[in-house]
Image (cartoon, rainbow, N blue to C red):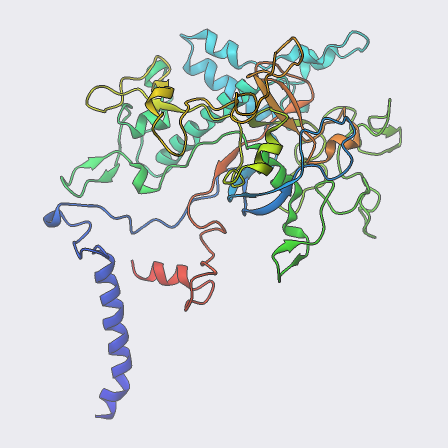
Length: 503
């Protein structure tokens, strides 16, 4: 009897675990079985452990912050009025894209699209941006992109359009590598033209690659390609939005917050605390410059033997001070493209209009995959990509959440706003104007403040502008190793282990 009483708690625990494992394979609302051919083979992913951190990226936990100017508006543009917004969690490159990174893209493009030389030509950076009428910069024209001495320096001379295309290419190469490493897809160095692995074409069943193992189809028992529901493939790489970029640059995680009202009691002018451009702590780094910028007219690096930032032009992407999110060169080195279309009144729109203060962004141009009459994606183009068509206004006229296919001018350039941008008559602003931020090696300290913003046409380039990529964070905003703090009755840090123990 005593033995039975002692073992009873353990028996109950075993029954409880068995019950959890059994219920995990059934629908919570219908009690139908998942992953069972006899019950229709409806699949449920019990092996998903969360989104993997993409290469060269760090997780930026989302939150609220005051976006906009942190000091005097020196040019008096009034195009970035402070307003409170919230940014969802996302991933961001810890460094700018380097020459080495971009050269891999160029070499791959040359190999795979050899039959389409115009694709490589469209991807080549404009190395002539280094030329200047009264400067001897010709060595940079011929050597900056390709010489190994600059391999880890940020790529420049890349337009917004080229940066977006690089991001698209990176999505496909990262996802292809995931499938190859898992033994699902066969490595194919001979792929070319329309036979190239492209993520959206693969998910739409338009890629004719060689499946080694694939996933088991619960309905047929056969091998099938990976689906979005499997949680294996990564979301798209892209340029960060302006709100994401500014939030990541400020890195307010390192400041002391007032836990009572959840608001920060201080703000930052730069991606570091304080107003000094030099490291202030009393250690071996004291006196070092935080960023690579132009200190004054004619002073790019200080005097010989006693330099300040040590670089006349760009520096290594891992040089200079990383902010509290672990991001390098969010001030100085090179300016960086962001995803947004430039409009000067956008900030006022976000102050006056509700529901645009979460993940604020200007530049939506909605597209749909071209489909046949049965709703299936049509054939790929010559580069292996799905064909997308613009959303027509008449197709969304009856919707409540949006009723235009392209909303570049929404409340800033349309009839409702009362503003009109007569491009090349009264302003340089157009539908090709894209925002860049961060300051560069050739800029004064004012432009190093994350709140400042400038613009350039999306098909133009500069020797002071580079870029880095971002990616949406799916699932738990704080990372998959963290339990929800708002799940009552569960101790933080335990919920994930409980979920995994049920598999």
